Amino acid sequence: MAENAELIARLKAEALRLGFADIGITTADAIPEAGARLKAWLADGCHGDMIWMPERADERASPKGLWPDVKSVIMLGTSYAPSLDPLRLEGQGDTGVISVYAWNRDYHDLIKKRLKALARWLVAEAGGELKVFVDTAPVMEKPLAAAAGLGWQGKHTNLVSRKHGSWLFLGAIYTMLDLAADAPHADRCGTCTRCQTACPTQAFPAPYRLDARRCLAYLTIEHKGPIPEEFRGPMANRIYGCDDCLAVCPWNRFAAATEEPAFLPRAELTAPKLAELLTLDDAAFRALFSGSAIKRIGVGRFLRNCLYAAGNSGEAALIPAVQAHLGSDDPVVADAARWAIERLETA
Image (cartoon, rainbow, N blue to C red; front, side, top):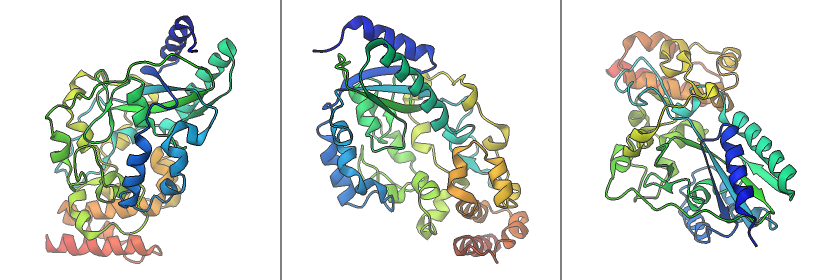
């Protein structure tokens, strides 16, 4: 039998006090169709070389697949809505574009800390075992968040909130408590297709379906080798992630810019100059991106992205900075430098 409404009301108030923007509750068996969709997506190879996805698909398919004793799932959202237009640097070839979520501190650290604080509060108030997750475990955060009423999965496959647009970090608490579930959110995309047509690499074979192998967020962050040539030009000046499908969502007009200090934009990350980034060695890269999500891809992958962006820039002044990487010990970086030189010389 579900726990009483008074406990849930205090739980939600505590979540907001801790800095979460939204909270909802769903049952552990709320997304029965998600497992089948995941397996079909994996069977089509849409995960690219993210081999950790098929390896733990059964655990990801359902909360009970990961933890058989879970009864309720508490989903929490933290807004990172930007104060700057994510598309404002389009066409500025000498400047790199970094995804909004990486403009400041790594969100994992802040959200995990808040999840643990809320978990401690819940255990003190009601007992029961629980587990907390933020983006590093096999958890279907977006379907669960939709089931918990935080929003709906839009045609770009990300969660959309009526209050926070497409800009929510998600965290989850799995608990053995039997908590009354919130109503799921209705799909409000309607006939809009802006996110589909905005994608520079046509990564959406159909609405609500993403092929990661064509997605610039995947290619610039998760993909480790050379980026296929057909996608290097469409990258333009994107050097870490891509926000195009999120940025054009009409629901963003209701989102107030985040006031969370950890997510406020760092000036050096909102409009970085490629000429400066191309001079980074490993130590300088680690120093610049200390505490940032960008740090985890390493200097080699980051330089690869910056070299492709330089090749797309049409800026002949970048040729010396690119040439410095032609003799790189990293063959992927050296290949990107050769490609960029050819593009710049042709331009």
